[in-house]
Length: 390
Image (cartoon, rainbow, N blue to C red; front, side, top):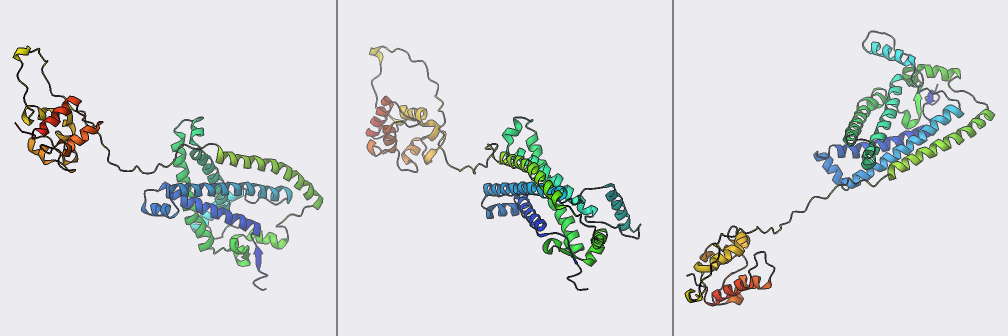
């Protein structure tokens, strides 16, 4: 018998297309989701950079999530059509016999049973994987909605459910990825070299090894059930009406899922480092209450000098920035410091108020240590007098 005649169809083209759409969405979700879960890792940061930044990664993640939900809507319809209209057996449904086969297989792997358990269309391992995907998808959709719509979620449930959903979402994703890598890929591609999801077929040897009961049914002609065309047409009309409503409701649910709210949780760009000016509030020196001095006893006016009043004047007005601190490298703590000037040049030019930076700045007004008009006039007079120290 030729190799071609010894092959048996395992998965039609529609099954394979559905499978690979699911794989594509799952891989995309895994890559973009784990990059966000472990965003502090170097490889995750590199991946996020390659994909265009964290916001782009989130958009890709959400597109893949919507794709998987749409694929789930199709899968429910496809399974329902095969079971209800074509009257196919729902072989993926677990039974009590699967529990017995699992125990049998466990004992066989331990060497306590000599015969390997005989399995049909789907093994108990495949059924476990299938329902794990169903359960995991439900968890991911529920927690994903909470993370996508946190404001709506916390308007109904306590705020603690959002971080709880984040933990469940991330851990379920990690569990799913590890299960695919460690269990599914090993048992399908490594241990049995099952290529049916690529070619659609299994050899007779593979069928004997993995699905001997199904092979016997195929050879006996009982693997599929025949349905009267009129009965099938009637069932088809019923199914399309019912599933049309159910499918529309599920699609509406996906639309609500995506558009329910514009979440307030967004990534804020890193703060820009800038130098700002924060003037200190000067502490006024204590002074005595002024007393009335008879005009006859008032001392004669003296020329301003650094030691007599200019130093005190600058300490009061400019002390916060140029006595207690040296903003712009300008210190007015001593007479020598004042004449030395700062980063912008000489603050005081004896005999030339117009060339003195302090006068130029104070004359503009609005300075944090702004002098009054009388104080500024006295300061100018001091410079015009040659800026004497004593």
